[in-house]
Image 1 (cartoon, rainbow, N blue to C red):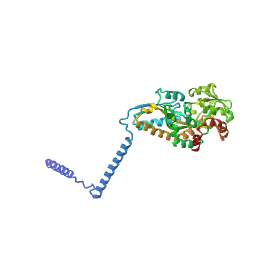
Image 2: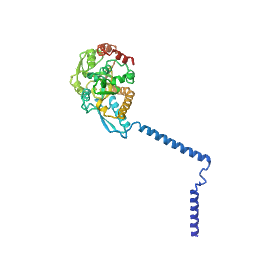
Image 3: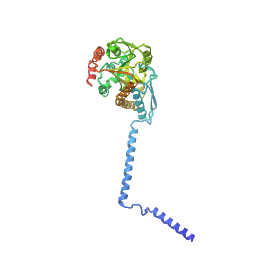
Image 4: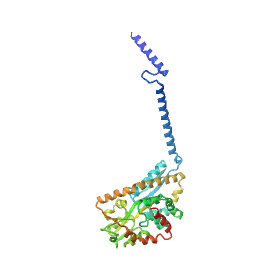
Length: 374
């Protein structure tokens, strides 16, 4: 009996195997033409989607020839901490460059002034030292190095709003300004523009308005525009390096200074100068520059990557700067900083009219083009 049962089971197994091998389906599987067509259509759609995704990935990865791209590290100097508006711009630039280059280009951001003040950094870059390749600088920083066009960006009350500045930064005129230092043989060239918010005065002692500044010693970085601005306000321009500003405020070497709001907070200046007047005398226009030596050693693809990443960082800066500034302003109020609003800037404009006149001679038409972009 047992032998008979085993034989029956083996036969059943063989029949099942034959049915399966012939492609026959069990009774509970659909065998209609519609089901077969639906399955084929679904498979075709999945195949097309995979092909499209593969092609898209191939196109994206093939935008730049990163496979044969030489590896390079570029040192980027930033005088402010990374948690400032311009510090974030440096991070955005670094992230995008390294992403687009598949890691073949490394941006080594040295922040918080570890490589020196803006003037120190510029001296190194223009002197051909080769230790700093890229830097974020204030527009007026190139003034002492022959940057006449850049100086126009720092003249008081030139930009009436952020929108006005970005109309310029995204215009063809901006490219003319960016290339000035390269064209005049300085050995650097501009990559892109950004901004760090409007600049305001802050002081050790209480300030209530423009008249409070008279007789004060206000820190400047020794450029003609800031010297003229401070003198126009009846104060005394006093040259102090940025790295020594905190102690200069603390010891009475200077009575006040000016910075964008985010930089004022990040550098702990409220601890020693807790009075901030929102005069907004200048929009903190900045540009990122690279030495010609560093630029020339890059391949065309690498140069294109830097330009694309610069456009991205500039765009992110445009989107984030105002919200970041407003956030910091609320934090300062919560921390007990005395904030003085300026309802009428007319007296400030009148006091600084001479510095505008003195520093636009020979560039009147170009300066008017800037004003017209508002």
